[in-house]
Image (cartoon, rainbow, N blue to C red; front, side, top):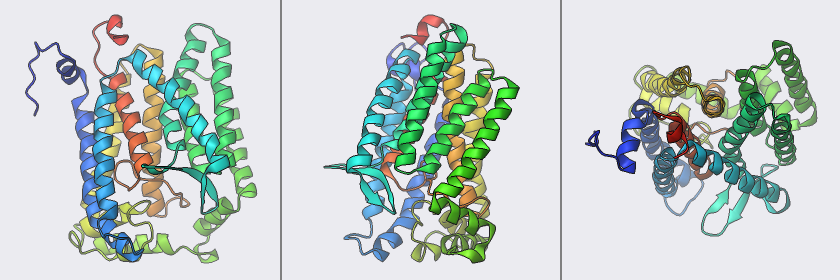
Length: 377
């Protein structure tokens, strides 16, 4: 426990006594699981693909998680006004980089989502769209709702449509679905008419059907989910076997076999490695940490009077919880597979840093403030 006096009026002192320390502790625990799971899963993957070092992924992820921790803490010290500014700047930069992927992006598995940047390797700019758009959309929706600035609401819708067009061009339907869910959740919390909710829901179903018809990889994943015999379900089948072998307490650290044969054992299917080596108990603990962050964040918003804070935090919590759900549910064959990382636990630099930024924004927005003046300082 950090020893900081309540009389300390420094930036660190004020941060420590106003931050939601329980949520911070849960997020740090997830980062800790990230270290453990990379140590468990990544060496076997690196050896199988012929990497120069068995510890290549692990060493990289140590750096990523260390940077993520620093980013989360630094962003959590910002004021509400500074979080809003970071959202606008981050959104502008992310949009430019996402547009650049369509022209000069590296094509991997038929999609152009990554940019090769010297010194940084491959970067997925769309990951940073999620937290930044949640902040900007929240401010625009709040302005339209409170100050009757309908142009702000129209701008929010226009930004969403522009982002949707860019993500469709890559294509990245999973990312588009997450951003759509966040945007819809924010409008719903802002007081969207129930008839409009129903209409938007029907549009969503129509969009899902359209994606099924237009994109062969979406059609393939849905068909394989509904009828496993219709195609290759190797990764899901192996993941389910891993959960079965792990049982209640797991086979023990380092004793798992799934990481030796599963291509994405360190990334999209890291939850299966956790299930085999550490068992149901640890999997439930990881699930409980994600649920705790989301539920505690929503409970804290019940006493919040600033509509922007409510909408922004709702968007950040929606994307955090939804991403965790999609990853774990895909591993358990509860939904069609989708290449989406488990926040802080899966391997990935862009994903980890973007999630850290989003959770830092959440911590900054939910800090205790005694007066309106503190919101802007």
